[in-house]
Picture 1: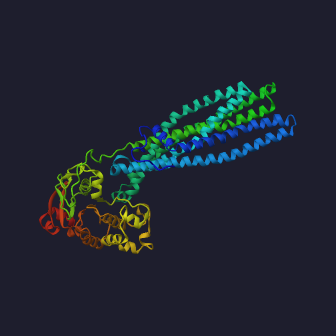
Picture 2: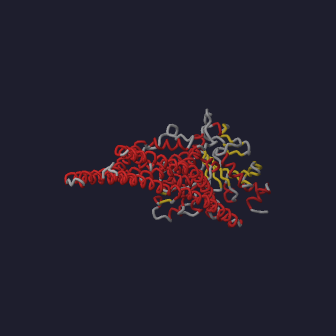
Length: 567
């Protein structure tokens, strides 16, 4: 499969699920057409075997002709070899189409999620994203897996009908009329199936989201005694999902049943008619055998029609949910005409809260409410568009977003580590050498983590950094932020998960490491506050006092109560 095109020209048409499916099909047009060719050759070869057997009987067995028998027996053998080869190639191509469509779905979804950025958790439930990456991609892939066999079924049914019409108009008409009738019956079942599958997929996403919430907040739930309430909620959701799943299963069982019953009835009808015609001498013995073979063979393409209907229904439901994500847009965007970026070494200010970060200063911000810390940090890094943050007097919302991101870095405890080596994880997109990495690790008192890894910087980092403890991950996140070396670093509770001795070392080293750069650390730890150049005390999202830690302890009782945990 080719690489995904550029963002604008290559974006899928996400106005509807059907348009998305067609976009994916066009993206792999060559592979789809090749699969259709192999599917036609494979199924057509199977369809011709009854005709060859009939000729072998009429021109070999009945007249006792050895040459006729050998000729048509050889034809049957050749067709069997062709069926084996074409079947293998069809399956190989169908699997390629399946994987390519699934991968492309994941690719465009992930790329769009990255474009939406930090707004994504507020716009879509995590369960929906998980379901897209598992259930929906599989369903969409299956839509393109069936196309090879469907192409073969369409061509072959037409070819068989023509052959039967040539031999017997009546039998040919039975096939030509019977196939559309069965397709109409199948279509009757598709509407309730589509509706119930859509409901099942929605509930599945909601239940997955609940599972993620429980997994992430199990300690909090135990702390507040909320385990029973969440368990009851999850149980209700599971029961509803099971009920909807059973209703989906009923429709699917009817669909699967008619895939066997209706072709079987058609086979019986054609065989009965062919036998009557043979008794009247209207067709030969070989033609009777051929007609029986055709009738039995028709079960394959007709069941393929039913399977394709089910696959397309599932794929359409899945594409609907993918489209819902692709339609998401972030409110944090670059202006149509960005203002000229200010020079470096300018203050970062927020008029709404009164917060001011002079250039090159290590500022600690103690917020009476943790929510205020998250709000102000996101606002100052322009992950929110409320308030009035400005860089050197230029409002952040008037600057190009890439310019803001390149100068202001927000480091939070929710930031993820991805699989790879520790070296690659730490340096990210920078070209930092090992000396820089080791210096940053020393600044955050994390050399002990490195010493405990047999492979050092070449050690593997598991998904989400699961092979590290919470305190280790927190230090590694801070080290990664220091290595990025932004003009302005904003860190939120960057030392909350480490012990007091480690926190004291980090607090003492952070300022000297960032000397000449602007740094804001949101924290209520006295160890961090005491090493800052200045401390801003925030209440109700407003700066109420600014000074050194020791001075604020004396002059601000509310600040003293916050940082010393006094009531």
